[in-house]
Amino acid sequence: MKTRILTGITTTGTPHLGNYVGAIRPAIAASHNPDAESFFFLADYHALIKCDDPARIQQSTLEIAASWLAVGLDPEKVVFYRQSDIPEIPELTWLLTCVTAKGLLNRAHAYKAATDANRATGEDPDAGINAGLYMYPVLMAADILAFNTNKVPVGRDQVQHIEMARDIGQRFNHIYGGEYFALPEAAIEENVATLPGLDGRKMSKSYNNTIPLWLPERELRKAILGIVTNSQAPGEAKNPDDSNIFAIYQAFANAEETAAMRQAFAAGIGWGDAKQKLHKRINVELAPMRERYETLIAKPGEIEEALRAGAKKARALAQPLLVRLREAVGLRSLRETTSVVSVAKTARIEKPALQPVVFREADAFAFKVLDAKKTVLVERGGFADPKSAMAAAREAMERLQMS
Ligand code: TRP
Picture (tube, rainbow, N blue to C red):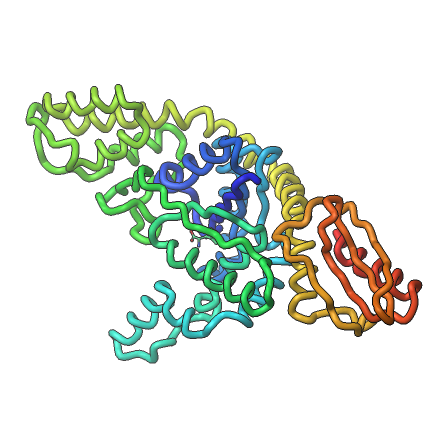
């Protein structure tokens, strides 16, 4: 079985160089691994937690989708979709909410940081905090668990969320007695650079120090010339390991180019020259992608199409899982008031080629629904006659096949 890797991107901002180096580029490289099955999605439900500007949500969704496609995401080879196109995700969120300890959410870093900040100013701890922020980890767990994800590449700040998704999935499995969910692991990209921003702190939209990814060439140059450096003069030897310019250069250059730049620093390259070289190097990499980006963004309808096609693929996986989960928790058809004998415990249901089987039990009739691999997906007993068992089997199949 291929490893399933899932990447979520919150749609609130405009992609910047830090996103490109730290998230987009490595994720796309990883998606080329033939042993992996990659899922990429636009976390627009998550975006609503931080942003109540509808135009910005839409614009950001468009820009981020176009960016990933421009950089080389192939929607034929990966599953690329928008969270809000998958109604199974909010549905799963609720099922998970009901097995999630409130105390677990109290301990989530983002929520704790917000309440701590309120306490520090003598406010009510929950002042100005919406319940979406509180529920953030459960929604994220649903994103992950809906597709039986194995690996989630994240930065350190997100590791706790992956652990929570594991806890929540495990708890559901335990309460309902089955392997409904694969348990995800965080994959922390150790050798991915965090890019310094214009002011030397980590490039982040919360510091307002970013360089947007798709600036036209001249503006990119201007932004790079604006990166702060120390006041060392041309001719003075400079320490590359203490320089934002070098750090950014390294994130784009190959080993040879990096070694050459190291030499240039030792030889006292001036900051202006170093910035010119940096601009040139970045631009070589970005220029062809920028062109694709511009073509894409001019045709939002095509991006919409790609996302819808992706949602179809994603839902084909999430729907059968939700059928099983509804069954497991007791959200069931009232036509079948017989007791459940068992519900499939396999984690994945392949493309349904389902087969009903009716058989006799001691003093009643029963049915099973099998998939192509003869895995029993649903089994129920207690029917008075074969006909009602078959009718119930068909109904169960219909629900399994809903799409
Ligand atoms: N919380 C992630 C972030 O801010 C975005 C995200 C939402 C996500 N759902 C996810 C990431 C599921 C990975 C898996 O970066």
